[in-house]
Amino acid sequence: MTIEPKFSLLQRQSLVMTPQLMQSIQLLQMTHVELNQFIAQEAEKNPLLEFPSNDDEAGAERGEAEDEPYGHSPEDAGADDGYDNRTEALSSDWYDNGGSASTSRLNDELDANYTNVFPDDSAPQRLDAPELVGQWKSMPGSGGEGADYDLDDFVAGQVSLRDHLAQQIPFVLPDIADRLIAQNFVDQLDDAGYLQADIVETGERLGTSLTAAERVLAALQTLDPPGVFARSLSECLAIQLRQKDRYDPAMQALVENLELLARRDFATLKRLCGVDEEDLLDMLGEIRRLNPKPGSGFEAGVSEAIMPDVVVRPSSEGGWLVELNPDALPRVGVNQSYFSRVTRNGDARAFLSECLQSANCLTRSLDQRARTIMKVASEIVRQQDAFLLNGVDHLRPLNLKTVAEAIKMHESTVSRVTSNKYMLTPRGLFELKYFFTVSISAVAGGDSHSAEAVRHKIRALIMQESPDAVLSDDDIVDMLKKSGVDLARRTVAKYREAMNIASSVQRRREKRALAKVVVRHDTPQVHSSKAPRRATPG
Image (cartoon, rainbow, N blue to C red):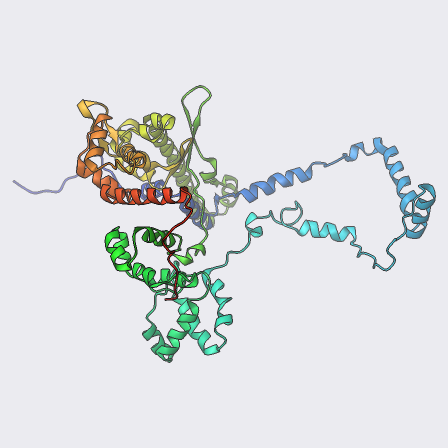
């Protein structure tokens, strides 16, 4: 057998990850903001891409409106000669004789006195009409030469936490050296207002004593908002209680044992604080009124509203009308006329041909992205029709495979579409992934239930329980079975803990204590032999 070279022709199919396919996949999972940023970057590199903004469209419409005659057209000027003559005569009668002559004539003919009744007052400053017109045209949004106004220009600037503290520091620390230490502490505050610094290390780095650093910190802890510059939650609450003159020994013991409060170990807290149940409830009420994050009122960044990608509303013919939000769709165009003019030069033909191919691929990818989102959203609405009509109790279990098989796409494509995409429905604004929940089997082979709907039922059952009949996890399991939901006790406990709901023992203790407080406040008390607990400085 001899080995010899030869040619053969083979035909086979293979999936190749081309740059255009990679771009389509990336665009599919981008949010609205990320997509606009990506298109803006592409428009800077590609001269054939057009990315018109709302300001450009408004300016074009305004320019067309300015070209049209606002009042009478020049052709109709001759038809209104009488009106113009009357206007000129009126102007000459009232204004041509000067200020004093016009005023005297008005006094004689109209039998009125228009002289200045306040001769000591200075004459008001007169503004010429051309100056006013110039100011109006220069104002944003006036329709003149200025640009359109932005509502953000009229919003008051947000004061940050550091700026708010910097305005107060000179009043509590007159010494310049102390202010430098204070500025170093301000720079080490987190967004919640807590001090993330070691005082000893800070003092050594600044070359000051520990006593001076502690003195500066004690002065800073008296600033507004109360509780700022605390190094722990206990210290934050203690600072606020001191400013309210409520930091007595009993409250100090409570603040120093917050881990017992988190575990709801009220028996141990009563023993440590040396108070009875009534006083402990009053102390807990005071703790709840404090702010554990004093710096939360000063936002570090500007919050942005979520823009829905899909809008669902009832149709007049029945069913639901699913539409893409036009504000979330990017406006991209390809300038073919510019390509035709510039490609006459042979040097730029190759570059512009590549730009044209890239621009066409981008527009096709954006169109494919919009159609894919529309397909997925329409299938979700079809599957969750009962939820849109009746609420979360009728949310059906749904997975990616069901939607992918219905629209004949891959599960990964559906997963990319539902990531960071939002749908505005009559029930509210939801992320597309909200409609995909785990299936929970039903009793006696009935229709399965959604995990979100089951969690909603558990929350509703616990909210309706009375202090004398608190439901345990086993009771909730029995009640769910009566409603057709087959769920294990450990699953109920897992859902309850995920919703941050306490156990039945803790709920019974809290609800009974709350009921006693309500009864005590509702019942008029004429005389009480028990002296009120007074606050003493700690």
